[in-house]
Image (tube, rainbow, N blue to C red; front, side, top):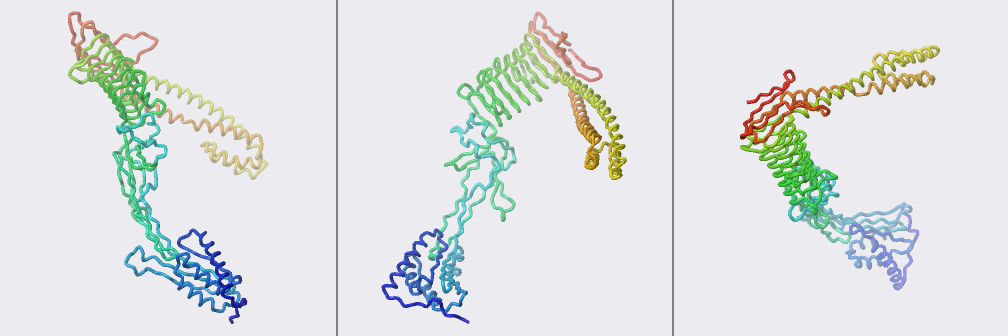
Length: 582
């Protein structure tokens, strides 16, 4: 049953009505002004404080002030306010004021404006709600797979990298992901609480220049995760170009190009090895390069090259040093030291007063000159050579020394194994003695009988997991010196058992087998002219540092002119070195 409004309205004088309406209007305007939401507007009015006539008058003044067409709203309010409100209850109405569902524009068809009014005998609550816009999203780098923030990011004007910052450039391998690019997504307009359409900006694609060494690969899941990956198509460093701190270009460089390495540039890769290949015209004396990639230089003027890859140099001048993990190729070298750790050294024209260490040393052109050098390799091929001064060849010296070092390591390991076996035997004797004592001590405790049995059985295979588990159970029931002694013995035995002697021995034997295989394919071929006053010495096998060694081959030129020489040498483990001279 409906009840009467407990706050019956008393008619107000016209001027009094206007004053109270102005007050309410200003209060509501102040509250609305503080709301930042363009989509939703809401406010509450106390019906105890303001009569219905004042509320309608105030809202009729407020709506034009905040750009709301309020005639429909006022009519709805007038009808609702005239209704009797049940006690401790409320009336509610929700009405669609505007709907663009029938519009031909699909972006606008979702828009609507809704009015919601709730009122009781004490309170009126009004809310106008439009439709939120769907924001546009520009194309962005959604995910980075390397530390791009630390990348210097700038290219020099000539297209090279600033060598002084080379170590800060991120290193990537071929096939690595670089970025995942999310495409642009166009948003949709919204509708504000006043009924006006809120436009959204046009979505822009990511403007990113993809240069050399970078491939674009579309994602397979185009529905749930649209976009594409940027992948490295070669191994190198990442170069980024930025505009106003935004990344606008990317490429991979596998080579650093420097015109001249001198005091104006300084050493490269001395503290942190340069991750990519390097191309230098001139390396001045006293300056050093360390790189993981290939190093190509025109002139090495007494400088130092160290690379994990190959080195190619045209002219190597006195005081220079080249160390490469792989091959070294040069035209001219004088008073220099060249070392190739796993590759070969190729002489293209002339070598003078220098020392070469490598697995292989060769010259295969029409004519070359060797003057006063020391060569050490396991494969030597020198044809069409003019030998001048005193040239010394060590055939297989480093390989024999390497094998002897492996023999020495194996002998030391065998001594460790013998010592370990003796210590293990001694520990086992003490362990079994302590175990007997523990067995006697636990006879009075039948609860430990099964644990002692498992402990004894585990000693046959030295299953440390079982030993630890059973001993832990025993120790909880009887914490005695016998238990502590056995725990100490087990830990000591673990230390011996866990030493990888077998793996070390297997590894050493494998290295010795590979060394023997390399020795079995050693070859030396010499063919050329020994100039007047020239000598050629060939040493085979390992050289004893403390004992003088005579050369296996000693050739001296004839006094009247050049002497033709042709020497072949091979090695087999059974027959040793076999030398043939023509």
